[in-house]
Structure formats: structure tokens, C-alpha cells
Length: 192
Image (cartoon, rainbow, N blue to C red; front, side, top):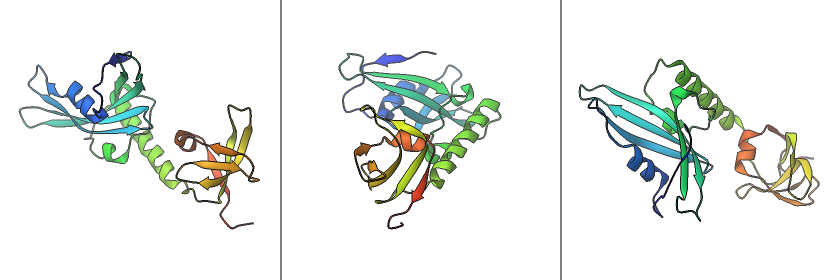
């Protein structure tokens, strides 16, 4: 499937938008509704979607939505949605969404869930950034000013501000870069 672009009401949350889009009745008498929605890096949304039948059966599956924002366009919001059974290649689903999902025997969905849990454990195992810590990326990072660096000293972990390992130059790293690229701690604050 392709992208869908629509006009999203200003101030409407992503969860409210998807609830309005996806909640409703099906021809077989079942009712679908968004249980929870988590937005990751403003590029991905993970939805726990419940479908309940009149006989009491219920199923909760995941929907992955890629997001695009175009504030100057009339159709200011775009999304591309994929069910977990389609095997989407996006594995940043938060734990709270994964815990809502009911068991499935769909192989693609099971593989997607496994990779999400692996990704979640890897993120939780990463060390927490602290001021003065020096980190090294396995692959150098190229900046728009032409600089290429692989080692950085943490100056402000909350705002993700860094200097070169020697203390020269200021760099802002994106959160997704720290989450998706491999890096390790070279030295802790106060260590020589």
C-alpha cells in the first residue's frame, strides 16, 4: 500500500487521529478500536488495535504507521500503515504496545514481535549518557559542515550536545542516531 495524505485538525493528537480513522464496525459484526498509540521519533507510530466479536472473542494486533508532516500543505499529514502480519521493517515498538498484543500464530507477526523485543532489550542494555563520558561510534558520523568524527565527549546528555573527544567543536546528535548506530563507551566521567 502507498501513502495516505489528509488534513489533520490542528491540536489533534496522533492517537486521536488514528482512533477517528480506524475505530468502527466491520461487516461481520466485529468492532475495531485503537487501544493505545505510541509515536517514536515523530516518524513512526505503533498502534495496539483491538478487534472484538459479538461471541466474546477478541484479538489485539499491532499496526505500524510511518508518518509524514507537511504543515504548509492543505493535506498536512501523511501516513503509511502496515499490519504486523505484513512483516514491516520497523522494530521500535515500545514495550507498552507489545504487552497489549494477544497471541498469534502468524509467522510474519511472530518474527516482527521477536525483532521488536530484541531491539527493546538492546536499547535497555545501552549505557546511559552522562556528562563527561566519551563515546565512540563504530562508523564515523559525517556532518553538514564536512566534519567527520567517531569519538565525542558528552556535554549535555538531555539536549544531546557533544564536543569532539578533545573538547573542540560542538555537535548535536539526533536521538535516532544514538539508537540506531552502534557505539561504545571509551571512558567514564573523571577517568583518565
